[in-house]
Image 1 (cartoon, helix red, strand yellow):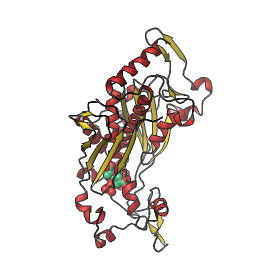
Image 2 (cartoon, protein in one colour):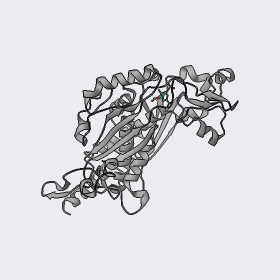
Image 3 (cartoon, protein in one colour):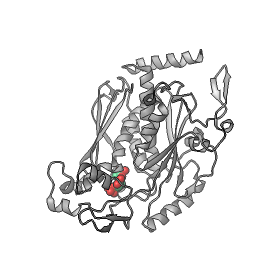
Image 4 (cartoon, helix red, strand yellow):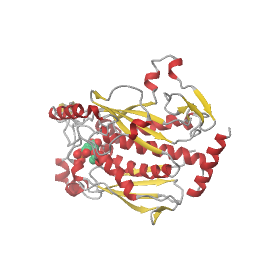
Length: 390
Ligand code: EPS
């Protein structure tokens, strides 16, 4: 049974985001500076809009930590929306200024965004009531929660990284990709690419899209190293870890496809060229001579690196607005423009790391149990040792 939960609350232009994480053991030391470093990485990247110049995300903890250590109870934190200063009259949780809110009313939904489907579902005729929560701003809270999980995993020798493979039609050279490709990603570079040889072409592509008022999607590799065999389970569909990873990663705004390992490419290969031969030696135990499965077989980790590719669609807010309909007049009307990004692919990788860290930490704690870090470590070491003797 899953052990961790994550809830977030908050609107993009409301006062703040709130996060609540339950299920982490007591005694995990949290490096808040490193956690805020992950929040900064999510904000960084070429192609972001004006909003990222306004925000400077930092988590403020309000529960579950004492002196920088988890206590075992729910962990609560807040991340301020600096932009709220100019949105208060429109987005005040208790009171709004009718005239100011009317000026920001959204009645021409954006194709590709939650605007119309959400409006129909929740019966909100100002589609701002949908877009504010559907906004990818919410992912900041996920990154903070993921950073807590990353630190738990790190304490057990597991690391999580990501790198960009393509934006628009500019892609790094083709070839099987491995965790080592993620270790060379320069976090200070504009695209967080696994291979910077295409950086100039990518910048040109983003500039050209921006000039045309258009947007771009892309693909990202997310991976984890040090994951022991035996997380997840084959016994029932809800416990299969590949399904849990895909669900978590697909829930990231704009991510429309997820491939575990070479899952997509394998569909076009013969079995003899798709699976990973098994080897054994005394030092390493069982290993594989390739990792096309991306570290998961039968819904269980197999001890190889976990590798997942994310496919992000282009952002649905376009400067000139795609063909739409005004929900009040029912007449054709271009979708309304809201300030937005040209691309958020580099940021998507950081969110992917957070979601992968959350799912892996959840599966790990499910396996080890434990109310304290000491107990988690003891149980973790025990089951890793037992596998060596298998
Ligand atoms: C977003 C629209 C933009 C992005 C935002 C996601 O915000 P705004 O409309 O305020 O310019 O910048 O992303 C963030 C605020 C963030 O922190 O990532 C959207 O519609 O999804």
